[in-house]
Image (cartoon, rainbow, N blue to C red; front, side, top):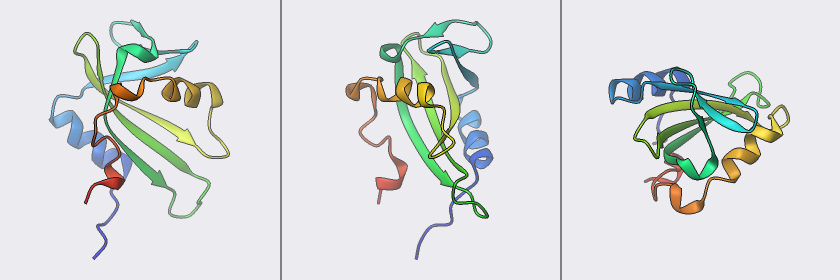
Length: 112
């Protein structure tokens, strides 16, 4: 039986309960910590997990929730759109994160 797909907010709440409370914003080619205002470069970001979503009523409404830890041990989440409406600069930022900075189980959809 296929698992029911949770909504982004369900996962955000789950990870907040596990200490992933920092909110990150993408601005000027960096991921900004909304509290400290520190601007992280791709090599300072570690992806613990990511979850992909497709809109129930609109397949073009697609997003990815990234679960992030930083080089200075901050933990939080960041939600981006992908597909036809994606911010290409933001998508490139995540492509620039070194492969070794992704957890071996980062893609939740590949887990059994």
